[in-house]
Structures are given as structure tokens and as C-alpha cells.
Image (cartoon, rainbow, N blue to C red; front, side):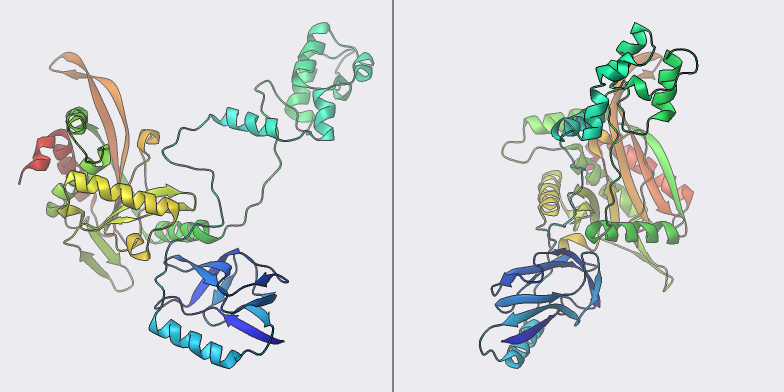
Length: 437
């Protein structure tokens, strides 16, 4: 028997530490060579760690959410038989130096409850569904079925008794302010007095507190958003855009698309963004605030904020300015799918110069999105709604959308942001210009 210490390997240039986001083993587990040990997350991606030898796990380094330095112990494995551990370590070091694996984004250990582009049940129906699936506790059984004995010992009108029964309230627990229980006494009990998970008339049910450790992608999102708000003086600007013409054009294009992908509104918005950016180079830029340098980028590498099971990820449309609307539609579909299924490569998730964030049909009236640092702007189209509009004294039904932009006020002036949105608005309201040279 001999002990083999598997240290956290060098998994990327410039990476000094990694976070344990999921353990696949525990002390006492028997593993075979190449079995999965843990998922660790760096600043760039999540990487799977595999066992270099077969044996029994005798020690692991920390819990999920802990940060380990590169080169520190990840696991200790007890190996049977005669194994030249020193030679094995040298071979692994040689392999890592000559052929480092490219980190890929893997699925996080934390499941979120948000899924984009799927119809959701209402909050009340979701809570009711959960309540139906959970077994009732003894306390709940007592509340939902008040005992006849308890009801006989209290004085109350038939109306109050019926209401209490409908609410699942034991009247023996309700304090009367007079000689018998009135509706006001029942109201006071419901609002202040029970504390036992009663069900008010809406049918909802008290739930226990849930403590969730913030690790992995959710921790990274929290850090990035806090850094952005702490370092960037944000301002937002919102304008209304008439999307009627471009929506009609989109319908015509889809009806004659052949075997090309179906167009959503996003490829057309992105095409308009790329068309309007050349006159506003201060928006397609990144700011190195430590060096005091702003880089105005010639190419548009557009980040697309995408909701996934791991949390918010931002795959990047590289050189979006060179793509037509059909190519944009295909690339949007590919990148969104790879982000959601965890197959996106690190190169797909880095290098953006400007970000677009859209909640689609959930878009609301307006948004004030947080800038994806070190970028200096983020654009947020909101929900398209049909509303009456007065044109030349007559009322017309038009499809309107509010468009939001948040900017870094250290780099972008309010006048520049407003002027850019007006230019973008011109392309969206006159969509034929998207196809003009």
C-alpha cells in the first residue's frame, strides 16, 4: 500500500486558484483511473478533475465552495501494489506542460429555478403543486382538520365556524375579545397570532427558510456584478421604438426562408446595432481603469446575456458586423445552446466588446442593465407590445418597444448615448436600411 497525493494541476495560463464547485467522491470511495473526482471553477471555465490512479480516497481538500491554490492537494489516494508514484508524478507534470486541456464550461452543481423560453406556471400554482407533493406534517394535519372536540369548547357563530374550517384553523387556538369568537378575532389570529403555517384564503402555505451556499457560477456572477457596480458610474437611457415595420419584414422573411433558420427579432436588432456603431466608437469599447486606457474596437464582438441552469452566461458573437441576418440567427442558436448545455468553450465566453441583454417576452417596460465590465455599454431591448398611436390625427395600432442602454459615465457622455439610440432607432424603424451598403 502507498499514498498518492493528487495536487490541483495548472489548468490555464495565469490561473492561480480554483473553486471546488462539486465533489464526485468522498473519503472511503474506491475509484478507478480516469474516474471523475471533482469539478473546479477558474475565472474562465469549469474543469473536470479525473483520478490519475486507481485506489481508495483517504482524504479530500475542503468542501464545495472552498478555494484551492494551484499545486495544493486535491485528494489523497491509497494505491494497492507497487506503483512508482514519483515516476507517475513526473509523467503527469510532463503531460500537463506539453498538452494542457482547453477548459470547457461544464454544468454547475447549483441548479437554479429560472429557465428561459419555457412557459412558466404562475407562482401560486407552483407553490400549490409543491404543497400537494409534500407529505403533511403532524402540525399541518392538526391545522387542516380541526378537531370536533376543540370546536365544541368555544363559542362562535356558524359563519365564523365555517370560515375557520375553510381556512383550516382550530378555533380553540383563537383568543376571543368578548364572550364569543368574532370574525375580527379570527382576522387577528390569522394576521398575528398563529405562527404555525396556517393557510390564508389564497391557499398559499408557509414554507421553511432555505439556506443556499453561494458557490460556483452564482458566486462568480455575484463577484462580477458587484465589481461592475462598485467601479462603474452607471447611467441609463430609455427610448420608445416603433417596431411595426421591422416585425412585418421579419414575418415576410420567415415565410420565404426555405431551409434557413427561423428569424427572431434578435438578429435584426443586432444587425441594426452593428450598422449604427461606426459613428459611435466610444460605445464599442473597453476601459482598463487601472492603466487609464480606453480601447475603441473596430470589430463588434457582441456578448449575449443568456440565462442557463448555471446562472447568467455571456457567449460572444465574434465579428458580428460581418454576418448577415441568417448567419446571425444560426450563430445565436449555436451559442445559446452550448451555453445552456455546458459545452461552450472558454473562447466562446470571452472577448466581448459590447453586450446585448434581452428577456424576450418577459422584457417589461424598461430595464437598467448592469454593464459587463470592462465594457462601457450594454443594450437592453424590452418587450414589444401593440398600442394605439396617433398618426396625422388618426389612431393606429402599432407595435412598440422600449429600448434601454446603460453606459459607463467615465467614458460615455449622456449626449453620446442618446444620439446613438436615435441612430439605432432610425435603422429599426426603417429596416430597409439594414440591407443597404
